Length: 58
Image (cartoon, rainbow, N blue to C red; front, side, top):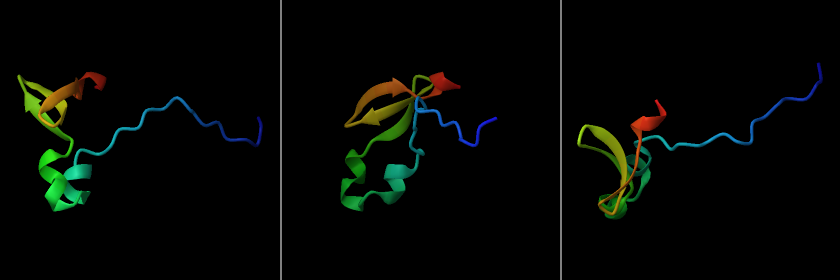
């Protein structure tokens, strides 16, 4: 064994769902990215456009 830690550089970071709704200034929250449920699936929505499904990585 080596004394070095192994760190994965290929990891994906996903922000917590409440990031923008709780931390963004109130005047910007209406336009902030958010997660919405549409057609029985969860989507990441920005400016009213659904970008990607959030529940595919389960």
